[in-house]
Amino acid sequence: MVPPLANRCEPRQKQCDSFHRPVGEIEMFEQLIPWKNEVRYLGILFDNHLRFNNQVEYAKTRGQMVRGQLNSLVNRRSKMSIKNKITIYRTMNRPSMMYGSAIWGTVSHTQLQKLQVVQNKFLRAAFNAPWFVRNTQLHREANLPTIKEFLLDDARKFYAKAAVHPNPLVRESVNYDENAPMRHKRPQCLLLRQD
Image (cartoon, rainbow, N blue to C red; front, side):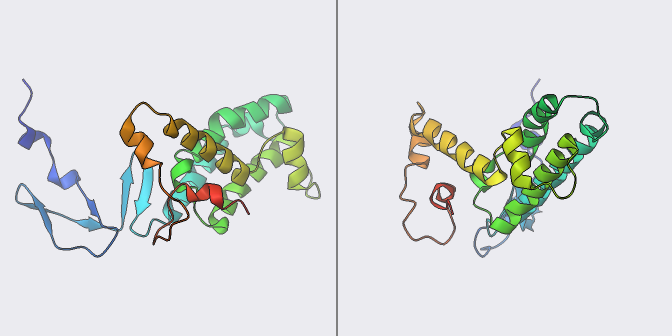
């Protein structure tokens, strides 16, 4: 037997985030729901200013964690071919770091650089490159885009798919004027900022 809705909804597990000044207390089943500065939704951390700094830190930590778990396969002394090491990065490390990047890709250059450092360290270990080899050369030899290039390409694909989606609500969500003045950057602004 399925319990009634009131028994399945746990107010202790709920939290509220406001993208403006909170208007008051929210109560559910006679329990107050606390206001938070940060909310996780579908694996993405939304802060109340939509800066996504904590999401980038989380993505960086995930990338470092996955690289640490794969260290025996991709370290400098590994006998695995460079092609296989790059394939491991593309299939395991980069997806764990870049999940939801079409949404949080509007972060500052400083935040993106943190993720680029993780990718650079992986490439340097995979190629067993000494300190004087440039990161651009490693990217060129690996045929791997930088984090910024990957974000732009991923965003283009994401919005192209959303524009022809069968659900009209999804089509409407990406159909807006990204040049219009607004307080927060919308996700599609990533495509305009190609500096």
